[in-house]
Length: 159
Image 1 (cartoon, rainbow, N blue to C red):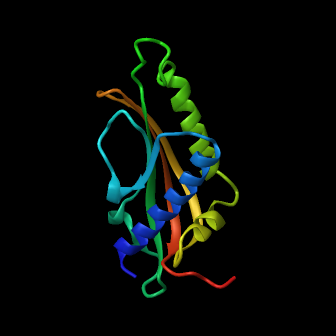
Image 2 (cartoon, one colour):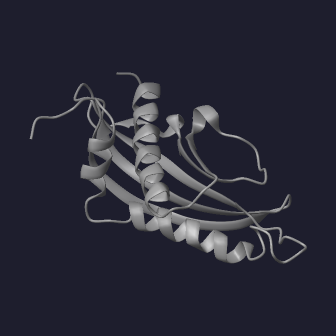
């Protein structure tokens, strides 16, 4: 399995977990995706799992295990609804709810098992949180990022 395939599998696994958490929390109008459908800043709340295929490092030649960095980017509207009564009347609260939902779904003791179960032909043996970054985009969005370093392979391993 090539580097891009392992990157795709990791992105798909994270996106599946995030979609499940967002749906369970009853959050509406949140776009969850991967690098394939990554969009620029807009008014819609969105969460993307983006694997950096340039960071794919084989653990040992020929074993099929890789280290891979994956960024989870959470973007939410930072522009307050002028009427004060619309869906973005309190954008900071909306943003914090989305960030908390995503972080709680991913920062668990079962993250490796959860990722491995989320998609076929993918096993995650280690998921190390690397960094948390926050920013505000000049076009009116808060951006929160959670970066993981995965130790994974592109096949399902027998238990």
